Length: 623
Image (cartoon, rainbow, N blue to C red; front, side, top):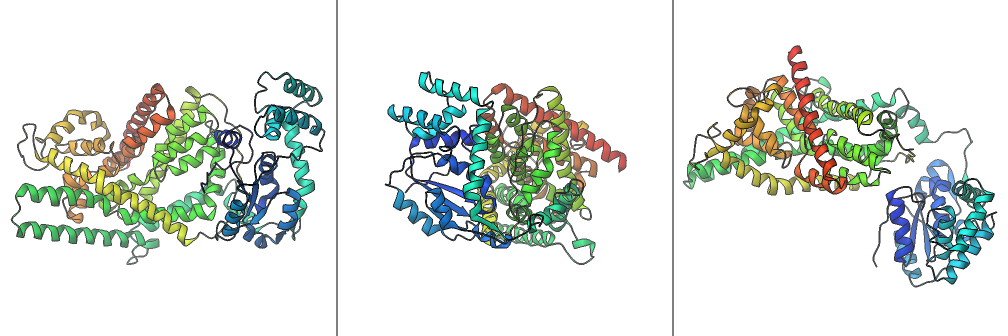
């Protein structure tokens, strides 16, 4: 069997791209069976879509999900009586615990060859006669799903198509009801409340709060909510990047232990390969390419992977527990100030993982204005590929305050997004924000299997990039750093190398930012340029140019080459500038406009330069 996973929606009314996709697929592709997943804990809200799916001419199964949560809410549901009232099979399941799945799939398979005629819960309502006439007319014309098509046409979701009969029926309804769409919606909810809601029994007082509601009273508080969110983020960065846990001397943080272990492994690898190459009589250039180039560059990135995985573990826990949906709710008030809603926070939140899928996720937003503005702001949410940069400078320059430094960098990104959003809303995007409705899931304990799968996907991505893009780039960088334009080998990492000439040619642009000054200023510039390929390449480039295989010497070289203000400006520029070529490719596909794409890239570079300039001189004044 083929299972087509349609987007998660609450109705077939075409307000969003997801709803259009789902409606058109059902109308045009004639699926054998529709599996409608319904949240048992929020029955009325979910059954609105069910009443629309009942109008389609194909078998329907209601998968009653989250039934395991009902007992925790002192509630129960008569699924057999509920199924009889619906007139379609109802299968209780728990997606979280994978229960009821076999029965669900067996039921779907048994109905695959069955026939079903669509019916509408609106049949006995004041609009029922009109719907029946329209459906009979469409059936006579052999239109697929006549009942569903009739309702969609009379609601105004589908065009009449020049049909005089349908036009007459719709005109008659319009004379009787001021707003047909609102009338149809109200009649559906009336039917749901009267005929379906009684099957859900709640054994609690009307004024009694559920466990989730009690927690939300604190975590989504209009004053305390955002400070609590930042407190969670600080805890994550403290445990990951802090030197001593909770400031207790001699108690290293988990992130510090992981990094130390990774550094030791890379040191052993470097020493072992060095000894092997020396014993085999390898030439100087081969020794430099393998040890200083390949191991130094790739190892510089891989040594920070354990810390990055720890950050993703915490973020996955927050997401699986249901808290991240609350973060979107909290951010709605802030985002609305510059023309966006909490819905944009979802793609922006994904930006903390990777800019590419988050840019692709903007296609779920309602308007072109929301999509374009969100895409412009996404890179300011620091992606996982930028974490090795922060981890490197935390180890080199900010050991005692590394957690505050990383939190500060993330905060700079969020503040830059807010200010950029306000600026763009006042100048380029002037439309008002669209309405935002968010269903908050119940809090639940994250499942270990899901967390491990998330981490494995992230780890696999890093390993693949380290073995392909980063490895290839470090080899090229080493060659360019050790040969001049005449392809003669020069002193390693000298200004006379190809990279030195390239970096020196463009470093003037970066001199005001503090990190391109001095004879070796071109090295930081080259790292920024290679970071346009992939942000992990920033650290691998610095590893080739400064580090070699010894992590301690690498950190010492970075500390000697960068002042604190210059390091902050360097990190901020990498945070805010063009993320990578993959992100630009995603931007081109989603913007669908060369003009908007060029504007976005130019805006990223401009903001990165201006904010880095401001951070450098602000930090310098306090140094």
